[in-house]
Length: 74
Image (cartoon, rainbow, N blue to C red; front, side, top):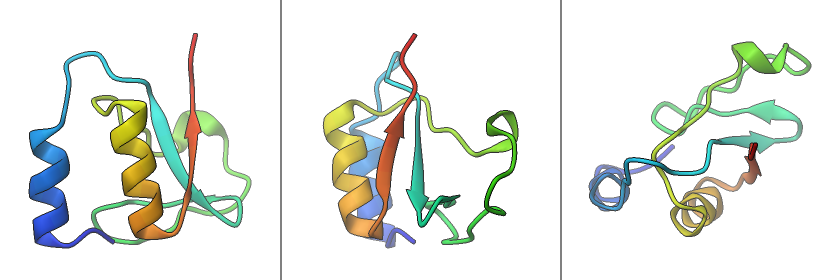
């Protein structure tokens, strides 16, 4: 889960057209605001995606929350 300071930092770095990303720990997608993990194996269309971060910002977030950034490019 991100701290208030981290949330402020990444919010300032948001862009209009980022690379869609989800953050995973052990195959479970995590909500970076609450730390809650979604059930393992749920359909990707139901997983939480974040749309307004650059790959650099997403990688920073992943490091902070101990997750792997999974990018969706297309």
